[in-house]
Image (cartoon, rainbow, N blue to C red; front, top):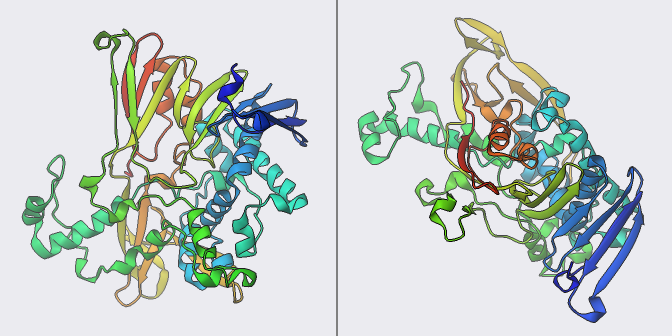
Length: 476
């Protein structure tokens, strides 16, 4: 290995974690840091190259993903903290009442099924992998509790410290890039106003669907408030001057520093869908000068610092994969291993439906379905809000999904039926199976576990095989 192409510290977790970085200048040619970290089975080495990419070498699977979590948290801790709060519905705890609606929406849309079944969907040892990853994140957070000088400046600006993670944070669905229920509501209102034929003339609908409205649904009473909770839990976190700790209120750059510390994903639901143009392609070796396939992958994600992606190289028995993925997830979403390379882009699919129910005038917790009244499931929860006492809320669910809005005057309730609330729908996490694929057949089988978002998957391998597979699910 040529040291001239590496640049930054090297860790070894031992039981020890050895951090090693390589640089091109003599003064920074090689830095080493050895940490003793509990929970490791064997020593782990993390080498960070000149581009900031971590190459993690472990002797077993547990230590590999423990080290990935530790290393990602070490480099992206504030990004991790904001993600955790978005996933758990605890943003109001640090930013106050203006984020209460977001937190209610976040808790309303949390996955509430069996956790073991959920985690083992993404890999046969999914529960063990995710737990090791989470333990690694928490090990670094514990390390900062002993060494608070390691905390990024953003924590000091807000006067907060990072919280510990659980597997539920990893499987959060809030980054799924799915929002077609917004289109469905807008289409229904347009059809009610203009008629189905006129709406079809103004928009393109693949497959020539029947846009005739169900006469039982009164579209005239549907307003923008119906999707308030749905939209709120997905929006970007923004900081205001009053969020900054008193000691920094006089610093005009403090809010800018906080804003720059967070990636801002493109708000898909407020953009012109025809302007979104992710693309990927793969060419057979029969059409290239080298005789080997060429693959290109161009997902149109927002450019930001820190990035929405996190590059990493993972090496352990059974694992040798490099590429990019969400920093808060174990594994690699887009990349290559010793056998093949793959990429993905998102395509539009009907992942969501808006359910409209009559509610019982004598009992608002009952809705009418198939000729009879059914009880909603009601969960009481409590949200901490900065500057005031905790707020007690009720989260309601029908057999189809979370209740987004209740129109008490007209005795109507609206619920979201979403494919991404079902088992195995945490975005990108099923890439764990793809990371170990050795053939097109194995890759395609791995793709069958990827559900949300809907994706165009492409593959090219060393044998010259190329392939395309669409993945995604819709509510039925």
